Length: 305
Image 1 (tube, rainbow, N blue to C red):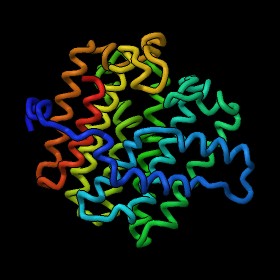
Image 2 (image 1 turned 45 degrees about the vertical axis):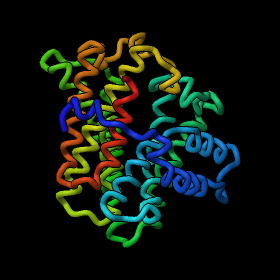
Image 3 (image 1 turned 60 degrees about the vertical axis):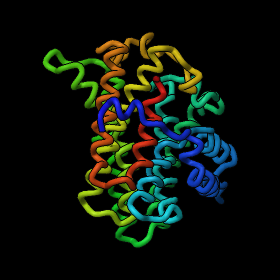
């Protein structure tokens, strides 16, 4: 698919695309975070505050859509979608902490450490990680599929991907031998793209997709992750908190390494369009059935148009 076709193709709205999946997912997420025996009331309240905050639910929706594209059922994929969202929610809670990105606003609301306290926010993240894997281990069938899901999510969320990317992002500096753009891409292939890629791949795994399809889904998700990060950088660069749900222009104030800082806004937007075209091409062998995933990806890109 060409860049011109990507820009010209009409898309349904986010509401239209997720109308079948989102209510089922929200109900499953609410059930998964219900108060448990032994969990202090304040911690339980903070967990639900973090997880049930309003959001587009991009990662679980990608997972559920991928499962449908691969011929699976939404109901069978719901536990994996919940697990992905729990890991994502934990990462946001910890990223917002004063020792990390030090944000006071997330999804238009006070961050967890502001609404509660810093220790509670740390414990929320600590609780969400095992809960995610408990759900995968006990609610995905058959057990071989549950094992595969646990393995993929653990890898994506671990030190070599999500956490490692965050560590390099916090470090900020680039060695004189490194290419800054390549270094930035390396960060976001881990920090951002790994969780989007695993979301799409888990949908395929739960649906019983073959190795070639899973590989294509994963590559699509990695490219989409880069598009998401570039558009996120552009939104911050333009200082648009209404679209981001958090403070704008923060990256510039902190002197962080971003795509607009390195390439300029126009070149960054062109790069996002190019990577989006590459992402769509990954799914072409899957035929028309893959169109819902491409539509979701276009909506990610459209945030900065």
